[in-house]
Each structure stands twice: as structure tokens, then as C-alpha cells.
Image (tube, rainbow, N blue to C red):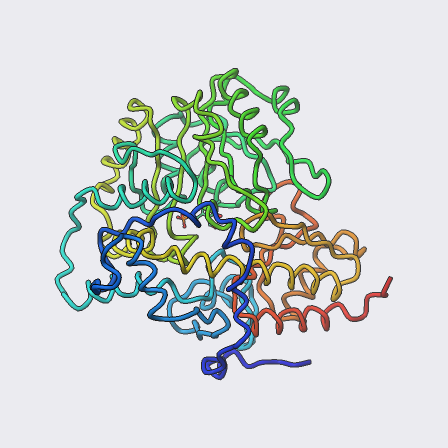
Length: 461
Ligand SMILES: Cc1ncc(COP(=O)(O)O)c(C=O)c1O
């Protein structure tokens, strides 16, 4: 076994790679943003005569000044209050110091340089008083969504919340009553379940169906499950786990279903920017403009730019009645004054992070391919769903013939990897495990080597 000591991972810091996989990847060329100008009326660095003429010059300059980003650089996150790394022993029971974190959805890469600069400027000023929302944050979000996804968002539709999950809780409080049912399409992001139950609402599970290697919703089945208490649908778009990018037709079918049955549709699009070449995320508000009155979209910069600890998200609705109810809940919880650092970081990300994202996506895509190939080779019978989006590999171990508890034991004890057990994601997830591959390649390769060792006794087919 080729065990790396993650306590010494700074070893990798100086190992820059010539083979930066970013430059010619098709994802960059096909990015919906590729040909459009960038909005950056808050420059991350001072313009020079050569670059100040167009707003696009700013992002281009930030990028050119730094050169390609080295996503292979390993940053030791232990001892930094990183939940992903510093909660391993507490949450998984894996106590070995070389354990690898592949669970919660944050990345092991440094955030875009423009974010660091904005935060550094704030730190240097050293006057961290209450944040004044002058409208630039929602404008930055709207500009980003227009550029990357072709969605028109009026900043007046936007309510910032301390993250998406808290936003979902506030939405439930605003638009439903205790005892009401919220439709989920499991297996699905586990915090949906948690926040519904914590708000005394009930989960109505309508399991996804796997067809041709991707998930699909079964709305006919759902029709038969509805009760008079069913009020809300939580859609995860793109879907976590499984990485499904929903088609326009699928989104329209769900939207029509919601209209037909008088349901509010909450479309959580936090993963919307993490979409791989060959796939395009369609915001629900674009796919189904006719249900705008019953739609709330949640988006954030935190997943895209690795700022999860900033804990800032946005709830977006063009329906002023829904917005007013939501804002009343936000006010009732004293959440109408926003976190200065989170707002600063996320606004800077939308304004300056585009070239970083365009480099990240092909790196993640190569990690996805390496992981899929690697795990299917390392573990006979394992099958990794081909992700259209997200950096969360979703692996079915049912073909190994092992019980889920045996699979879990091998991953945790033998491989010393903390991954997310599939049952967390609700019905349909029992034989699956989710692995976060948004990590530098040296760590990914080590994880794959360990998984190979952990399942080495399985017969080859
Ligand atoms: C679908 C989905 N929504 C929301 C979140 C978390 O959002 P936040 O940290 O802003 O609460 C995640 C994190 O993985 C997610 O996958």
C-alpha cells in the first residue's frame, strides 16, 4: 500500500504539475459563459491601462497575472476548523491520523484569488461592523445567473439567508403549516429530510427510478401518493446524489404537476455551476416560466467557489406575496442583517471567480473519470453512476454481493476513508456510498489505492 501521511501533505505543495489538465478541455469552450462579458464593477485588483477598458479585462487580468491554477496542490486542512477534516473522528469513528475525508460537499482547493483579495482587504481595514446591503450583492448574483445560465433575476426578488438549508427551513415556515407534507425525490440530499422533520413537517418520499444509468422522477406514482396535506415539493437541480441534470421536459412536467396540484415548488440549484461538458443546467425559472408564481429558487456561490463556511445563500422568487412571507420569517428570526465576511466573499466570487471556475470544471471532470474507472476496477461489482454534475460520486455496491455494513466497514476501517453512507439519502440509497472527489489528485489516487486494498479479496470477474 502506498500510504501517504496526510499530516505531512504539505510535501505536495511544491509539486506543481506541468500537466495542468485545464487548458484545452471542451467544458471551457462549451461553457455558456464563454463568449459573454463579465460583470466586475468592483475590481479585485487595480486596473492597468492595458486592461481597464472593458469589464472583462478585470477577470482576464486576475487570471493572467497568476497563471494556471494548481489544483493538484495539497493544502493541509486539519486543525483549521474544517468540518470535513476535523470532524472525521467525531462523526465517523475513524481515528487514524491518515484518514481521508470524502464526505461533506466542500472542496479541498483554495478559493478564487479575487475572494482572498476581497477578504484580505476587509481584514486589512479591520473595522468589521454591521454589513450594509447596498444592493451590490443581489446584483452580482443576478449578473452571474444571467451570464452563466441565461436567467433573468430582478435583485428585488432575492432574499439572502445564512445558507441554503436555513433558507429551506425559513421557506417551510413561511409557506406551510406543521403537519404539511413536503415531497422529496430520494435518494436526495440528506439535509432536506432533516430540515423538514425539524420544522414539524412530514416527508412524502417519491423514489427516483434509475433508467439507462440516470435518475428519473415518477410523477404518476407521485400523483397516487398526494394527500390534502401535500403542499411543497423540494427539487434538487442538479440532483445530489447522482449528479442528474434535469432536462427541460422533466422540469416542465414537474412544474405542470405542481400547478395541477397547487403545490409550491422549491428548486434548490446550489449545484447549478458544477456541470460537466456535454450537459447544460436549465434553471427551473427558465424551463417553466408559467409557474413563476409558485416557484422559489435557491442558489449560492458557496458550493461553486468552495465557500461553504461563509454560510450565505439566496432564496429567489418573483412572487411578491411569497417573498413577503419569507422576508417576514427572516425578520422574525433576526436574520435580516447579513454576515459581512460571507457577503464579501460570495460577491467577490461572482464578480471575479469565473476563470477559476472554468479551470476547476475540467479538473473535476478528470477526477470524476479517474474515480469512476478507479473504483470500478478496484472493487469488482461496484458501479459508479455517471455524473452530469456535482463532484459527488455515487457508487452502488450491490453488485459486490457484500452487505452494506460490510462495505461500510471496509471503507472506514480498512481504507480509512470517511465517505457518506447511502442510507443517509433516504429510500433507494441503502446499497450506495457517496464519495466527494473534489480533492487534489494525489489524495484521490491514494484513496483509490486504499479502496483497492480494502476490497482486494473479492473475486475478479
Ligand atoms: C442540494 C444541496 N443544497 C444545499 C446544500 C447546503 O447548503 P448550505 O451550506 O448553504 O446550507 C448542499 C450541500 O451539500 C446541497 O447539496
